[in-house]
Length: 103
Image (tube, rainbow, N blue to C red; front, side, top):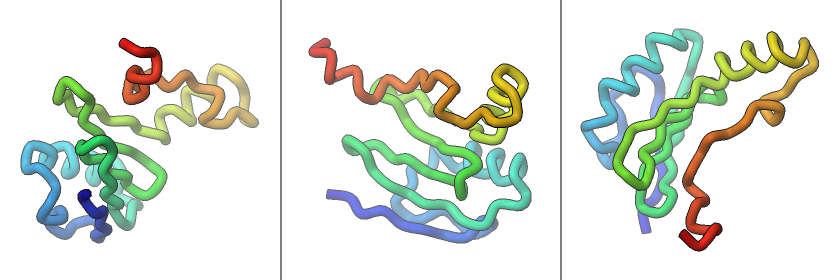
């Protein structure tokens, strides 16, 4: 079992974060200068990093780094569905639960 962690934006990532994610973390921090903290969790042995509720970095089953920018999703949803749109209106193309389909 791997435990999660939190650290402040601008500080070095937690020691359990794979170094291959460091550049992506830096890019997300630059894209969101008002962000305060990262939260690291583990799902199926893979890291998931949330930058407040602005962005998320994950690694898929094939080892590909994925970034979700929730501010961009919210902007796109509002453009498509109007000001009252929520993130639930946007299709989540996450494949983490493909195992549920038996394949």
